[in-house]
Length: 221
Image (cartoon, rainbow, N blue to C red; front, side, top):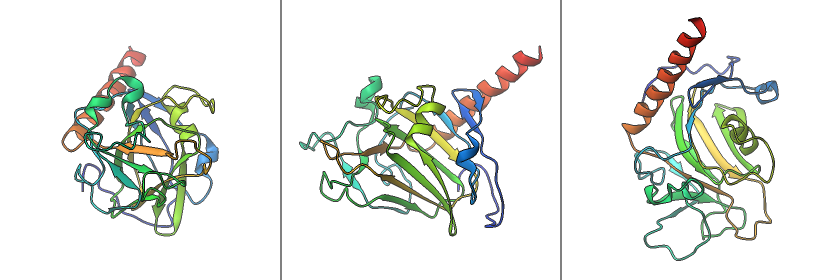
């Protein structure tokens, strides 16, 4: 367990807040349709250190999807997180899921079980048809690629997919499912994601919270 300590109660109705690059934002009320979960997001358009696939980074309970190692893969089917921001070499392995099953094994959604209310990831080439479902028991909150791009300050245009962003989610959830709904991709790849091992994540979050605090102090001055 990292960071916040939460009591998971299925009946809770939870508010959704964002911290994006040190600025406080609120997700739309549409994202809070019952059942709902609490999520805090911290983001930056970089990989803070070396990023790798979810399981190799130390996250347990990861299943589904396919893992790509750019050093050995010749498939050329996926843009590794960071390629759109010039930080691609910092990502040494990453997870992919796709309805077209390219590469082999990618047809299964990426599922992360056993979470305790926190998840951080480096999301590459964010598309409108990317989704993360956050579960608490049988309840679910869906966070879309369109929301992610908007929260990161890139707008909601469906063609604005050349976005790589590092996210930190926190709240009331015990499972996350990363999925895509587009079966017609020419490349066959729909969702690329990596993660930075500890302790980089907590350091990043600390910087985000420090930036938010400084912004609030300036507003009060």
